[in-house]
Length: 272
Image 1: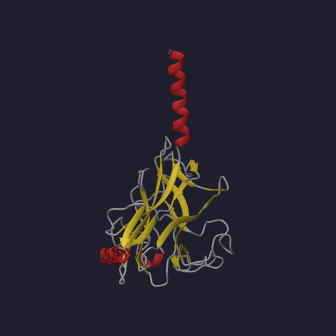
Image 2: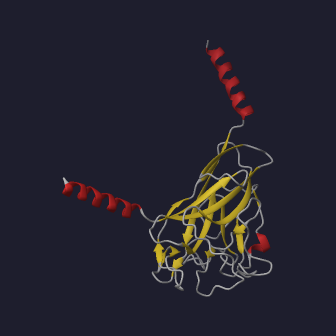
Image 3: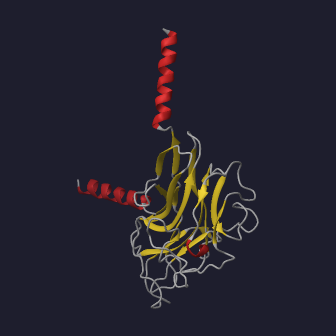
């Protein structure tokens, strides 16, 4: 019996190990506070304002906080009439720049969230919203990357992923009194906020994705890294995360549904 229990524990341990790892998720909200991986929103000719967040998580033992990740969020079916919110400080700067190149994790503030602006961006490399990109798939897209990266993934200047949105924080090595406090969360770590207005017609779905993760220079893989030693200069846990881009669907308004219902009744009467 003991050997059976030991075997079950061993299998359970293997299962936990197999499930351990990182995730990258885009979530959406209409109030900037309550976020979900999918939203149903009623059609509005004037548009429904959406706030979106890129989050990271890991359940790997020993993770002490996010080290580094670079990514390019994209949204399909992003029509020309949809509006876009601007980024704080024009999308450039850093944790310690004046004015800062990061924002608080709060509604109405868009950009990298403090303290994940370790990498300083210039006006030439600022975080930018691209409505079209050279070499993109057919259709209307929103892609977020650095200003100089005008091509879709795999195109000129966009082959490594290193010119996406860079979110990093220092551990203890190199930290100064000017640096924001270390964020030790490892679950639903809010990295980046962006906002837009949806005017798509009823029935349309906007599907999110994280187009490309940055190349990790230690492993030459697309990866996210987590600190496991606060006194190291290099984040030691390196993982390729599972991606969940989420989606938004424009659903018929109550008035439209009522009209559909009346139309159905009329057809039914004619048949009788």
